[in-house]
Amino acid sequence: GGTAAPPSAVGWEKNSSGRPGARLMDLSAQMDPAATAAAAVDLNIRLMRWRLMPALEPEKVAAQRCLLIGAGTLGCAVARCLLGWGVKAITLVDSGNVSYSNPVRQSLFAHKDCIGGKTKKAPAAAEELRRIFPGAEARGVVMGIPMPGHPVGAAEVDGVRADAEALDELVQQHDIVFLLTDTRESRWLPTLLAAARRKLAVTAALGFDTFLVMRHGLPPPAEEAAALGAGGLPAGYEQAAPAEAAAPPPPPPP
Image (cartoon, rainbow, N blue to C red; front, top):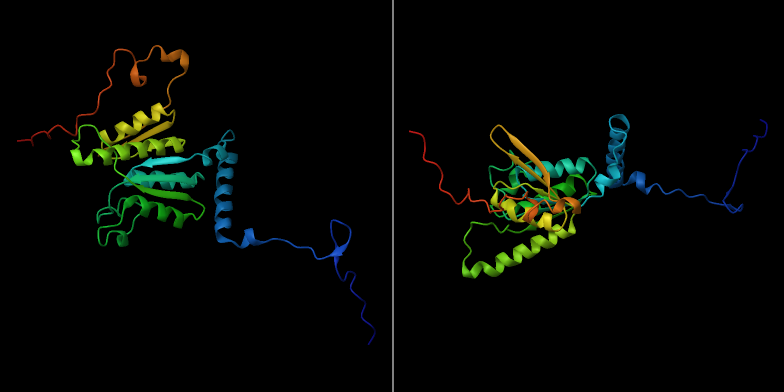
């Protein structure tokens, strides 16, 4: 047989300096599952903007630091929704433990979290968020919310004061405060702190067959402040602590 023709290109390829050498390509981003997940989430949000809402600025939404007061049914649902919008910085605050009735209603817990009765909701929810999306910067803070109308013993004063100061610091560290607890009085102090620190606050509450979502927290512009009283309420309104929880329940029907 005849001699085979040599290939048209052999050896090193010229690099950007015009000298022969190896050309390298970093494929780590394509091979890392966490990076792949982050790219997929970003692509999904950009497609949403392209198809449904061209004026949407998802990068501004994703950059928000969110503080969730309450890691129960509402807290779990809101945290999952925030992940879907690309939000990574999520802090959950709760002092309760995961109980056997929680996993069927609260999507960030499983049956294993109930065993022993000592698993705290906030850290468990944050861990599950990081498992769902490795790029999440989620953390859980175990802390009670000081509430009006609840008596504080002499031995508890220092602890309640420390909780109030810690809550104030958390509000200052975040951009949006979500009030997701199951009582009005537990939302009272976070509401005042959000207004005082000029933070956007979002209240969400569930009833048996109704729900409420309310945006508040940021004080009004300076030109409107003169017409408002303390706490941003219209003149003539009084600012009072909720008293419903302290009142006895109504008698049962005959």
